[in-house]
Image 1 (cartoon, rainbow, N blue to C red):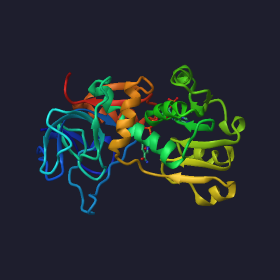
Image 2: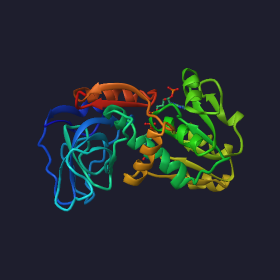
Image 3: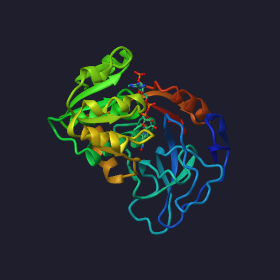
Length: 309
Ligand SMILES: NC(=O)c1ccc[n+]([C@@H]2O[C@H](COP(=O)([O-])OP(=O)(O)OC[C@H]3O[C@@H](n4cnc5c(N)ncnc54)[C@H](OP(=O)(O)O)[C@@H]3O)[C@@H](O)[C@H]2O)c1
Protein backbone atom coordinates (compact mmCIF):
# COMPACT_ATOMS: atom_id res chain seq x y z
CA UNK A 1 0.00 0.00 0.00
CA UNK A 2 1.01 3.66 -0.31
CA UNK A 3 1.83 5.40 2.97
CA UNK A 4 3.66 8.33 4.49
CA UNK A 5 6.57 7.17 6.65
CA UNK A 6 8.93 9.07 8.90
CA UNK A 7 12.55 8.40 8.04
CA UNK A 8 14.07 10.10 11.07
CA UNK A 9 13.55 12.52 13.90
CA UNK A 10 13.20 16.07 12.80
CA UNK A 11 10.52 17.87 10.88
CA UNK A 12 8.28 17.39 7.84
CA UNK A 13 11.35 16.96 5.59
CA UNK A 14 11.64 13.46 7.09
CA UNK A 15 8.28 12.40 5.61
CA UNK A 16 8.40 10.12 2.58
CA UNK A 17 5.47 8.96 0.41
CA UNK A 18 6.30 5.37 -0.48
CA UNK A 19 5.23 1.72 -0.50
CA UNK A 20 4.78 0.11 2.91
CA UNK A 21 3.53 -3.32 3.99
CA UNK A 22 -0.24 -3.49 4.32
CA UNK A 23 -1.22 -4.29 7.93
CA UNK A 24 -3.43 -7.26 8.82
CA UNK A 25 -5.86 -7.16 11.72
CA UNK A 26 -5.01 -9.37 14.68
CA UNK A 27 -7.41 -10.46 17.40
CA UNK A 28 -9.51 -7.54 18.57
CA UNK A 29 -8.33 -5.27 15.72
CA UNK A 30 -10.01 -3.70 12.70
CA UNK A 31 -8.47 -2.97 9.30
CA UNK A 32 -9.77 0.35 7.93
CA UNK A 33 -9.51 1.51 4.31
CA UNK A 34 -8.57 5.13 4.99
CA UNK A 35 -10.44 7.68 2.86
CA UNK A 36 -9.04 10.82 4.51
CA UNK A 37 -6.68 11.71 7.35
CA UNK A 38 -6.54 14.90 9.42
CA UNK A 39 -3.17 16.61 9.90
CA UNK A 40 -2.00 17.67 13.36
CA UNK A 41 -0.70 21.15 12.72
CA UNK A 42 2.12 21.06 15.21
CA UNK A 43 4.85 18.57 14.55
CA UNK A 44 5.17 15.60 16.89
CA UNK A 45 5.11 11.86 16.57
CA UNK A 46 5.51 9.24 19.27
CA UNK A 47 8.56 7.10 18.58
CA UNK A 48 7.91 4.21 20.92
CA UNK A 49 5.24 1.59 21.27
CA UNK A 50 3.17 1.17 24.42
CA UNK A 51 5.57 -1.64 25.38
CA UNK A 52 8.50 0.75 25.05
CA UNK A 53 10.15 -0.57 21.88
CA UNK A 54 11.23 1.79 19.10
CA UNK A 55 8.82 2.29 16.18
CA UNK A 56 10.69 1.86 12.89
CA UNK A 57 9.57 4.07 9.98
CA UNK A 58 6.37 5.09 11.80
CA UNK A 59 3.32 6.16 9.84
CA UNK A 60 2.02 9.46 11.31
CA UNK A 61 -1.53 10.84 11.55
CA UNK A 62 -4.14 9.54 13.98
CA UNK A 63 -7.28 11.25 12.71
CA UNK A 64 -9.16 9.20 10.13
CA UNK A 65 -12.33 8.58 8.22
CA UNK A 66 -12.82 5.49 6.12
CA UNK A 67 -14.52 2.15 5.66
CA UNK A 68 -14.08 -1.08 7.62
CA UNK A 69 -12.22 -3.48 5.31
CA UNK A 70 -11.77 -6.47 7.61
CA UNK A 71 -12.32 -7.33 11.27
CA UNK A 72 -9.97 -9.51 13.29
CA UNK A 73 -11.03 -12.46 15.46
CA UNK A 74 -13.20 -11.46 18.40
CA UNK A 75 -14.53 -8.22 16.90
CA UNK A 76 -18.32 -8.40 16.70
CA UNK A 77 -19.35 -4.74 17.05
CA UNK A 78 -18.25 -3.71 13.54
CA UNK A 79 -18.62 -5.22 10.10
CA UNK A 80 -17.01 -4.89 6.69
CA UNK A 81 -18.32 -1.90 4.74
CA UNK A 82 -19.22 0.32 7.73
CA UNK A 83 -18.31 4.01 7.33
CA UNK A 84 -16.30 5.09 10.38
CA UNK A 85 -14.20 7.90 11.84
CA UNK A 86 -11.71 7.79 14.70
CA UNK A 87 -8.84 9.16 16.66
CA UNK A 88 -6.39 6.25 16.95
CA UNK A 89 -3.74 5.80 19.65
CA UNK A 90 -0.45 7.65 19.17
CA UNK A 91 1.80 4.66 19.88
CA UNK A 92 0.77 2.63 16.81
CA UNK A 93 1.09 3.29 13.09
CA UNK A 94 -1.25 6.08 12.03
CA UNK A 95 -3.71 6.86 9.28
CA UNK A 96 -1.60 8.57 6.62
CA UNK A 97 -1.78 5.43 4.49
CA UNK A 98 -4.24 3.51 2.36
CA UNK A 99 -4.93 1.12 5.25
CA UNK A 100 -4.53 1.32 9.00
CA UNK A 101 -5.35 -0.72 12.10
CA UNK A 102 -7.85 0.71 14.59
CA UNK A 103 -9.51 -0.70 17.70
CA UNK A 104 -13.26 -1.06 18.16
CA UNK A 105 -13.11 1.34 21.13
CA UNK A 106 -11.68 4.04 18.84
CA UNK A 107 -14.08 3.73 15.89
CA UNK A 108 -17.47 5.45 15.72
CA UNK A 109 -19.94 5.68 12.85
CA UNK A 110 -19.03 8.52 10.48
CA UNK A 111 -21.51 11.42 10.87
CA UNK A 112 -23.96 10.88 8.02
CA UNK A 113 -24.06 14.58 7.06
CA UNK A 114 -20.29 14.77 6.46
CA UNK A 115 -18.28 13.42 3.56
CA UNK A 116 -15.05 11.58 4.31
CA UNK A 117 -12.79 14.63 4.02
CA UNK A 118 -15.01 16.62 6.38
CA UNK A 119 -15.23 13.72 8.84
CA UNK A 120 -11.43 13.37 9.01
CA UNK A 121 -11.21 16.95 10.32
CA UNK A 122 -13.25 16.09 13.39
CA UNK A 123 -11.91 13.42 15.79
CA UNK A 124 -8.65 14.68 17.31
CA UNK A 125 -9.64 18.33 17.41
CA UNK A 126 -13.15 17.81 18.75
CA UNK A 127 -12.12 15.21 21.30
CA UNK A 128 -9.41 17.57 22.57
CA UNK A 129 -11.96 20.37 22.95
CA UNK A 130 -14.60 18.08 24.48
CA UNK A 131 -12.23 16.50 27.00
CA UNK A 132 -10.80 19.92 27.96
CA UNK A 133 -14.13 21.66 28.47
CA UNK A 134 -16.26 18.88 29.89
CA UNK A 135 -14.01 16.13 31.32
CA UNK A 136 -11.25 18.32 32.78
CA UNK A 137 -12.89 21.71 33.38
CA UNK A 138 -16.51 20.65 34.02
CA UNK A 139 -17.76 23.70 32.08
CA UNK A 140 -21.43 24.51 32.72
CA UNK A 141 -23.94 27.00 31.34
CA UNK A 142 -23.45 30.57 32.47
CA UNK A 143 -19.69 30.33 32.94
CA UNK A 144 -17.20 32.42 30.97
CA UNK A 145 -14.35 30.79 29.06
CA UNK A 146 -11.39 32.46 27.36
CA UNK A 147 -10.11 30.38 24.43
CA UNK A 148 -6.64 31.18 23.09
CA UNK A 149 -5.95 30.09 19.50
CA UNK A 150 -9.68 29.98 18.82
CA UNK A 151 -9.41 29.96 15.02
CA UNK A 152 -7.18 26.86 14.85
CA UNK A 153 -7.91 23.16 14.55
CA UNK A 154 -8.96 22.62 18.16
CA UNK A 155 -10.17 26.17 18.77
CA UNK A 156 -12.99 26.15 16.21
CA UNK A 157 -14.55 23.17 17.98
CA UNK A 158 -13.88 24.59 21.46
CA UNK A 159 -15.74 27.79 20.55
CA UNK A 160 -18.74 25.88 19.18
CA UNK A 161 -18.89 23.36 22.04
CA UNK A 162 -18.57 26.00 24.74
CA UNK A 163 -21.44 28.00 23.19
CA UNK A 164 -23.50 24.82 22.81
CA UNK A 165 -22.95 24.23 26.54
CA UNK A 166 -24.30 27.71 27.30
CA UNK A 167 -21.01 29.40 28.19
CA UNK A 168 -19.99 32.97 27.37
CA UNK A 169 -17.03 32.68 24.98
CA UNK A 170 -14.14 35.12 24.66
CA UNK A 171 -11.77 34.18 21.84
CA UNK A 172 -8.28 35.38 20.89
CA UNK A 173 -7.25 35.47 17.23
CA UNK A 174 -5.92 37.97 14.72
CA UNK A 175 -8.23 40.50 13.05
CA UNK A 176 -8.84 38.52 9.88
CA UNK A 177 -10.57 35.82 11.94
CA UNK A 178 -12.95 38.20 13.75
CA UNK A 179 -16.05 37.73 11.57
CA UNK A 180 -15.36 34.03 11.17
CA UNK A 181 -15.24 33.48 14.94
CA UNK A 182 -18.34 35.56 15.52
CA UNK A 183 -20.20 33.37 13.02
CA UNK A 184 -18.97 30.27 14.89
CA UNK A 185 -20.50 31.69 18.08
CA UNK A 186 -17.78 33.60 19.96
CA UNK A 187 -19.33 36.41 22.02
CA UNK A 188 -16.17 38.54 22.19
CA UNK A 189 -13.07 38.42 20.02
CA UNK A 190 -9.74 39.93 21.05
CA UNK A 191 -7.16 40.66 18.35
CA UNK A 192 -3.98 39.43 20.01
CA UNK A 193 -1.83 41.42 17.57
CA UNK A 194 -3.14 44.78 18.84
CA UNK A 195 -4.59 44.13 22.31
CA UNK A 196 -3.10 42.53 25.42
CA UNK A 197 -5.89 40.22 26.53
CA UNK A 198 -4.82 40.46 30.18
CA UNK A 199 -5.65 44.18 30.13
CA UNK A 200 -9.26 43.65 29.00
CA UNK A 201 -10.27 40.25 30.41
CA UNK A 202 -10.81 39.61 34.14
CA UNK A 203 -12.38 36.98 36.35
CA UNK A 204 -13.13 34.20 33.83
CA UNK A 205 -14.08 30.73 35.08
CA UNK A 206 -11.81 28.98 32.61
CA UNK A 207 -8.94 29.62 30.23
CA UNK A 208 -8.43 27.00 27.52
CA UNK A 209 -4.95 27.67 26.14
CA UNK A 210 -4.00 26.40 22.68
CA UNK A 211 -1.05 28.77 22.24
CA UNK A 212 1.32 28.45 25.23
CA UNK A 213 4.42 30.54 26.01
CA UNK A 214 3.69 34.16 26.98
CA UNK A 215 -0.02 33.59 26.36
CA UNK A 216 -0.06 30.94 29.08
CA UNK A 217 2.07 33.09 31.38
CA UNK A 218 -0.33 36.05 31.15
CA UNK A 219 -3.41 33.87 31.57
CA UNK A 220 -3.16 33.15 35.30
CA UNK A 221 -4.15 36.69 36.22
CA UNK A 222 -7.40 36.65 34.19
CA UNK A 223 -8.85 33.54 35.91
CA UNK A 224 -10.98 34.09 39.00
CA UNK A 225 -9.79 32.40 42.21
CA UNK A 226 -10.96 28.79 42.18
CA UNK A 227 -11.18 28.77 38.36
CA UNK A 228 -9.23 26.54 35.99
CA UNK A 229 -6.53 26.91 33.35
CA UNK A 230 -6.47 24.00 30.89
CA UNK A 231 -3.57 23.65 28.48
CA UNK A 232 -2.66 21.03 25.89
CA UNK A 233 0.53 22.81 24.81
CA UNK A 234 4.00 21.98 26.12
CA UNK A 235 5.52 22.89 28.50
CA UNK A 236 2.87 22.21 31.15
CA UNK A 237 1.50 25.02 33.30
CA UNK A 238 3.52 25.59 36.46
CA UNK A 239 2.04 24.38 39.74
CA UNK A 240 3.74 27.26 41.59
CA UNK A 241 1.98 29.89 39.45
CA UNK A 242 -1.30 28.01 39.79
CA UNK A 243 -0.99 28.00 43.57
CA UNK A 244 -0.09 31.68 43.70
CA UNK A 245 -3.22 32.62 41.74
CA UNK A 246 -5.46 29.96 43.34
CA UNK A 247 -6.19 28.49 39.89
CA UNK A 248 -6.57 24.78 39.11
CA UNK A 249 -3.98 23.83 36.43
CA UNK A 250 -4.75 21.03 33.97
CA UNK A 251 -2.55 19.63 31.23
CA UNK A 252 -3.51 16.51 29.32
CA UNK A 253 -3.08 14.50 26.12
CA UNK A 254 -6.27 13.74 24.21
CA UNK A 255 -7.43 10.13 24.29
CA UNK A 256 -9.35 8.10 21.73
CA UNK A 257 -12.99 7.76 22.75
CA UNK A 258 -15.71 6.08 20.67
CA UNK A 259 -18.58 7.10 22.98
CA UNK A 260 -17.64 10.77 22.81
CA UNK A 261 -17.31 10.59 19.01
CA UNK A 262 -20.84 9.17 18.86
CA UNK A 263 -22.15 12.15 20.87
CA UNK A 264 -20.11 14.55 18.73
CA UNK A 265 -21.45 12.91 15.55
CA UNK A 266 -25.00 13.41 16.81
CA UNK A 267 -24.32 17.13 17.38
CA UNK A 268 -22.87 17.42 13.88
CA UNK A 269 -25.83 15.64 12.27
CA UNK A 270 -28.18 17.92 14.24
CA UNK A 271 -26.45 20.97 12.75
CA UNK A 272 -25.04 22.17 16.10
CA UNK A 273 -21.35 21.62 15.30
CA UNK A 274 -19.38 21.79 12.06
CA UNK A 275 -15.81 21.15 10.95
CA UNK A 276 -13.77 23.91 9.34
CA UNK A 277 -11.22 22.91 6.70
CA UNK A 278 -8.70 25.31 5.27
CA UNK A 279 -6.83 23.01 2.89
CA UNK A 280 -7.26 19.56 1.34
CA UNK A 281 -4.20 17.90 -0.20
CA UNK A 282 -3.57 14.43 -1.63
CA UNK A 283 -1.82 11.93 0.66
CA UNK A 284 1.33 12.24 -1.45
CA UNK A 285 1.64 15.90 -0.34
CA UNK A 286 1.72 15.24 3.41
CA UNK A 287 5.04 17.05 3.73
CA UNK A 288 3.56 20.25 2.31
CA UNK A 289 0.55 19.85 4.61
CA UNK A 290 2.75 19.68 7.71
CA UNK A 291 4.87 22.60 6.50
CA UNK A 292 1.73 24.68 6.10
CA UNK A 293 0.47 23.61 9.53
CA UNK A 294 3.76 24.47 11.18
CA UNK A 295 3.38 28.12 10.15
CA UNK A 296 0.78 28.36 12.92
CA UNK A 297 -2.00 30.28 11.17
CA UNK A 298 -4.26 27.57 9.80
CA UNK A 299 -7.98 28.31 10.11
CA UNK A 300 -9.49 24.99 11.22
CA UNK A 301 -7.85 21.87 9.81
CA UNK A 302 -5.72 20.59 6.97
CA UNK A 303 -6.89 17.21 5.61
CA UNK A 304 -5.13 14.65 3.42
CA UNK A 305 -7.35 12.96 0.86
CA UNK A 306 -6.47 9.29 0.42
CA UNK A 307 -9.39 8.12 -1.77
CA UNK A 308 -10.92 10.32 -4.46
CA UNK A 309 -14.68 10.41 -3.80
N1 LIG B 1 -2.06 17.58 24.23
C1 LIG B 1 -2.96 17.25 23.30
O1 LIG B 1 -3.64 16.24 23.40
C2 LIG B 1 -3.17 18.14 22.09
C3 LIG B 1 -4.20 17.87 21.20
C4 LIG B 1 -4.41 18.74 20.12
C5 LIG B 1 -3.60 19.87 19.96
N2 LIG B 1 -2.58 20.07 20.85
C6 LIG B 1 -1.74 21.27 20.75
O2 LIG B 1 -2.60 22.39 20.84
C7 LIG B 1 -2.06 23.44 20.06
C8 LIG B 1 -3.13 23.95 19.13
O3 LIG B 1 -3.41 22.95 18.16
P1 LIG B 1 -4.24 23.32 16.85
O4 LIG B 1 -4.21 22.13 15.99
O5 LIG B 1 -5.52 23.93 17.23
O6 LIG B 1 -3.27 24.46 16.27
P2 LIG B 1 -3.36 25.26 14.93
O7 LIG B 1 -4.51 24.78 14.13
O8 LIG B 1 -2.02 25.28 14.31
O9 LIG B 1 -3.67 26.76 15.44
C9 LIG B 1 -3.57 27.75 14.51
C10 LIG B 1 -4.30 28.96 15.02
O10 LIG B 1 -3.60 29.55 16.11
C11 LIG B 1 -3.87 30.95 16.07
N3 LIG B 1 -2.83 31.67 16.78
C12 LIG B 1 -1.51 31.69 16.51
N4 LIG B 1 -0.86 32.45 17.42
C13 LIG B 1 -1.82 32.92 18.28
C14 LIG B 1 -1.79 33.76 19.43
N5 LIG B 1 -0.63 34.27 19.90
N6 LIG B 1 -2.95 34.02 20.06
C15 LIG B 1 -4.11 33.50 19.62
N7 LIG B 1 -4.21 32.71 18.52
C16 LIG B 1 -3.07 32.43 17.87
C17 LIG B 1 -3.94 31.28 14.61
O11 LIG B 1 -4.84 32.35 14.44
P3 LIG B 1 -4.40 33.62 13.56
O12 LIG B 1 -4.20 33.09 12.17
O13 LIG B 1 -5.58 34.54 13.70
O14 LIG B 1 -3.11 34.12 14.15
C18 LIG B 1 -4.46 30.00 13.96
O15 LIG B 1 -5.83 30.06 13.64
C19 LIG B 1 -0.83 22.89 19.36
O16 LIG B 1 0.31 23.25 20.11
C20 LIG B 1 -1.02 21.39 19.43
O17 LIG B 1 0.18 20.67 19.47
C21 LIG B 1 -2.35 19.24 21.90
